[in-house]
Image (cartoon, rainbow, N blue to C red; front, side, top):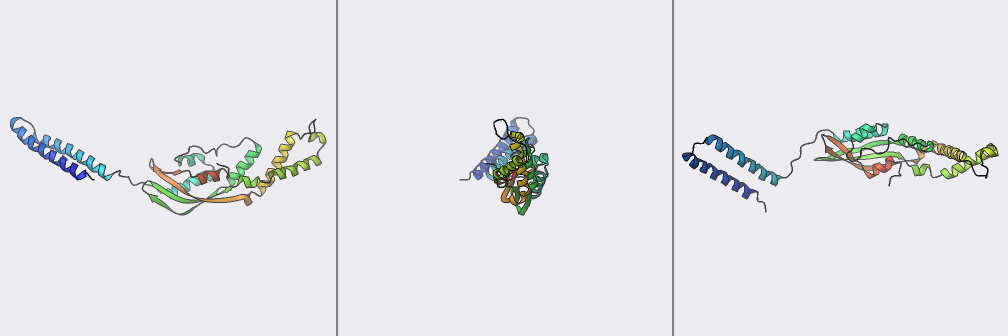
Length: 236
C-alpha cells in the first residue's frame, strides 16, 4: 500500500494547524509573523520532499562520455603495453601482471610472442542502461598450450643434434647425464622453432565487456574470457 498520499496530507494538515496556531499566538505575543510562516513552510517543504523521495526512489544522474570509446582506449593501451592507462580504466583490477616480464629466457620468448599476438575489434554498438554499458569485443591471442604441445619432441631432436656435433664432455657430466646448460640450450632452440610458427596457434574469443560509470568516467569490468586471453589461455 502506497502511504505517500496519506503522509503528504498529514504534513499539509500539520502546516495548516501550525499557521493557525501562529495567528492565535501572535495576538498575545509579539513575534514576526513573516519569518515564523517562512520557517513553517521551509520545514514542511523539507518533510514533503523526504516523503516524495522515498516513493520515487533513487534518481540517477545522466553519465557523460562514450563507453565504446572508453573500451577502445582500454584495449589500445593494453595491446601497446601502456599498462598505466589500461589499469586506470579498470574498475576491479589495478594490476594484471602484464607489466612484469619473466626473468627466464624461455619465459621472455613466450611473453614477447603473447604480447605480439594481441589484437581486438569492437563488435556492434555499445548498449547503455543508466550507469552500466555492454560492448561486444573480439580478442585474438596466442594459445600457449598449442604452441608448446610439441615442445618435448622438438627438444629431444635439438638435443640429439647437440650430442652429435659436440665432444662428449661438452654434453655429458662425469656420470653420463646431460649437462643442465645443454638441455636448456636444446629447449630454447626448440621453443624458438615453435614460435616461428606462432601465428598458426592464434585463436580468437568473443565476449561481452561490461562497463560501469564511476567517478565521472566509464570503467571496464574484467571479463573471465578477457583474462584467459591475456594469459594465453592459461588462466584458471
